[in-house]
Length: 156
Image (cartoon, rainbow, N blue to C red; front, side, top):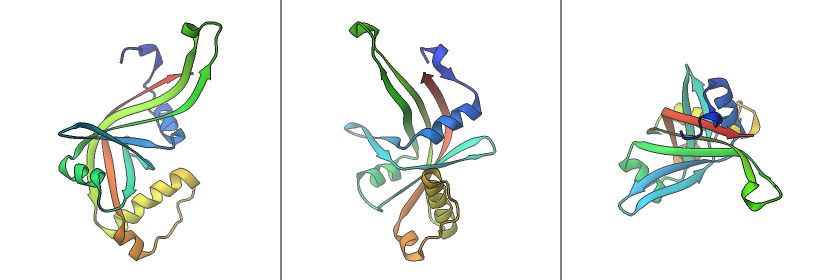
């Protein structure tokens, strides 16, 4: 990281920034290059390990690429604010961002899928007591990203 003065290394603060993000961009690749897709997400801190959860329809380019590669990248950001100054070059932009890599895994088990869906809904609603119709769960693709490396940066 070039700007070490903006790096966040406190794990608790890093999780706070993840919690403040609305969208996680998943980075996949194909023979044409990078394919980046914004997704709603949920997360958990499991014994010091960050795990992200996503859901999707069962087909499409994202799913096809994800099935071909288990190692993927991700990015999320929040806290955006333009700071105006007297000259164009003095303008700056405030933000918090998270970037990393990890391993994707498609969840098959009904209980695991419900758990992932609950992590997602908890992220946006604060509630963890949701129930999901079995038919809907069976028709929904749920996958998780076990993060192996990540960094966090802020300019506030």
